[in-house]
Image 1 (cartoon, protein in one colour):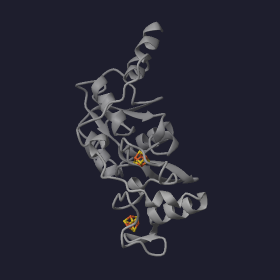
Image 2 (cartoon, protein in one colour; image 1 turned 30 degrees about the vertical axis):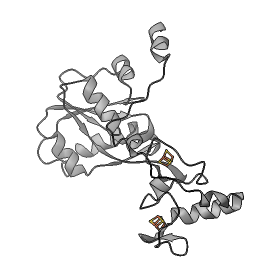
Image 3 (cartoon, protein in one colour; image 1 turned 45 degrees about the vertical axis):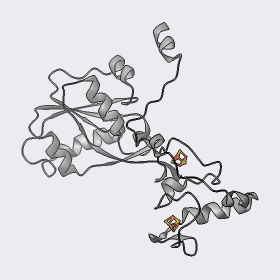
Length: 227
Ligand code: SF4
Ligand code: SF4
């Protein structure tokens, strides 16, 4: 899932200062699961922005809505009706959601309340950690299900650097070395021979270095067309 963190109240307040009426818009997708941008957080944020301690001067009139996903253009067009005379939207979605909302309601200003931090998963209740960089050419089959691109500070593809010590990364003694973890798990799987396979330099164009990427599935337009 995509994990986001709420920006500082000061930054959020300053981004909506000057508008008379703002829609605070939660997203029911990933940011609900990671408890940063769902309906509860949207109401909580509106309540806090209405507090004089958090908003210098008079805050805008704040309406609160939540939509299932802010990252789907057709869903927004079908289901989201914004209150009359709304001057701006404060979106609690990830950066993708903010951009789709901004496209749909152009030229209405759409301000992000979150910073999108990473693609990750919950290792334990309440703890989400980064897991994937969306590199466009997944190699988890060779690395025992542990991603060296997201979890190795140097994104190394052919084993650890010289800084790996006692299972930890040279960046910090609190961070496991991704390649030490890969080695240990491959050993348990009886697949240590994979450590000997040379992985050639990657084509980083697949990771988005050639410009924004696109994913298409045929048949989707037809399904929607039949509705
Ligand atoms: S190898 Fe690429 S696609 Fe696979 S988990 Fe790592 S970054 Fe994500
Ligand atoms: S110590 Fe391990 S995780 Fe850290 S940069 Fe070196 S190989 Fe990567």
